[in-house]
Length: 324
Figure 1 (tube, rainbow, N blue to C red):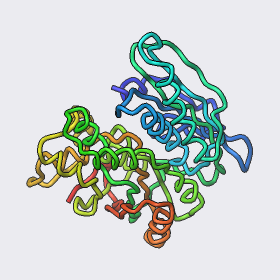
Figure 2: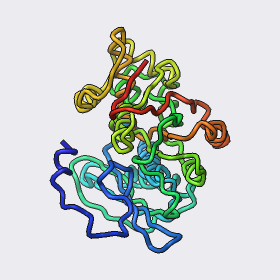
Figure 3: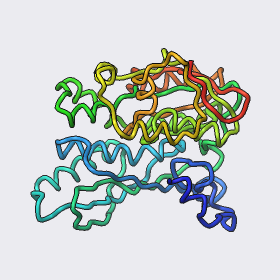
């Protein structure tokens, strides 16, 4: 539906300094200020996926800032986007949500400089993120190269764990893993942005691993090959999904891929659901040349991404993804 809506949007060719718009399904807009600076602007917000107000704020803020890092940039400041049912939600709960977001922004080294709030029927929270990047170091979806290695920074399964929480089947350890994974800042993206061997980068969020990889292969006019056995998955998410716990969004994601994904005939539904699982504040997906693979993985490890792994490669061919 989103693709259909954006297909009829007004063309942006009249703005030559708009370096990244909606054309390649990138993570943020980028506007050139001068030869050495470009502004990154993005926004993201959603309703709670956890019960704890502070955790909700942390996850939502981490998710919003991730789009800046996915462009290879560094955040400058944020604005809060707040919708709260003020007649039903205690003031302290609202304050805890905002405090969670402020904590993440402090960890990113930026202020929450303002924002906007309205009275809504359900809690909504997120950020507008503003960042900066050198115009020559933007990591677009459209610049992956044949032979590039695909590296995933965080394990999959956040959506499955959230579904398990709603069903009352998530253990305390699983909840901890979900919050820790979803609230881990993808700040390593700023380091990766300085690496010439990193050609493209995105973050894996609501469209699942396969959906966001399709954005890269469609933008770059390449194909991709994924090794299922190399894909990191949160341990409890793997157990839950094999018991049938999944999200409705995983099925909708699969239907939206347009037949551009090839799975093995023996692939069980639970594996497909993992690959389509919507991630709230998931990991960076990086396309880099073979010579940079070790340096990219080392950067992830140095920033605490213990599960980061090479999961496949870009190949020549029409835009589609092959899972083996």
